[in-house]
Length: 269
Image 1 (cartoon, rainbow, N blue to C red):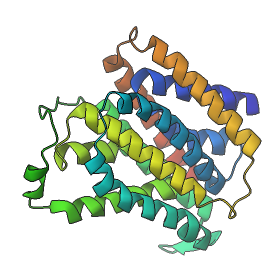
Image 2: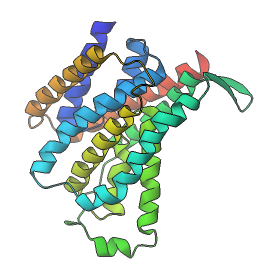
Image 3: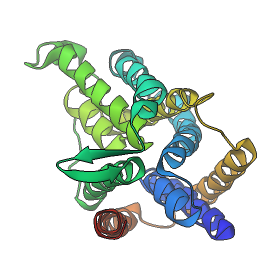
């Protein structure tokens, strides 16, 4: 099963390299159901893996100048504080088993149920056809005049930080629309900024686990290296395989995984 897990992370990295995102969300199910880690351990390890892979992806956008420093300042700070607090204080405070709507629920099952819902929404973002964004540059004066304003964006940053901290996933399907529609970034700059936010959130969130969970650094670094090899391979083939067709197909596969996780945790756990 360990070998199967490494193969799965190689494929996850390959998907990331081919379509630029989405694959990392399958890391937690692989760690839980194939490699037999607890949900809390899996989400911690996923934060590190997602953080490293997103950082590699963000570097390419940084070299092209397609990362918004303003968006990082206004959106990422709230996320960083939230994700660290969730990993450091909220997760350890959740009891191993508790009552929810008169049902006894284990901590691991609760995390995986929430994670299945995240997979569901993430898969929908990959399946649906995205309309091109015609805004070429950030328009901060226009943003400042929106009825929502910066406090609303900070609230969304806190929401993303909570999601990232709780289920160990980046939340890019939330971040990208926020950057486009509320911060007026063009699509490429939104993707680059999103990868940077995900990398910062994930790695800062992971530090919240240091000293709280026993971390197998040898395994963590080797599985991250396997995923990075997949990213490099995927990036080399990215121009030869149309992502417009691959991304929806992977979205449908991800949707099936999310539904399977939900059914297993609700009826077979």
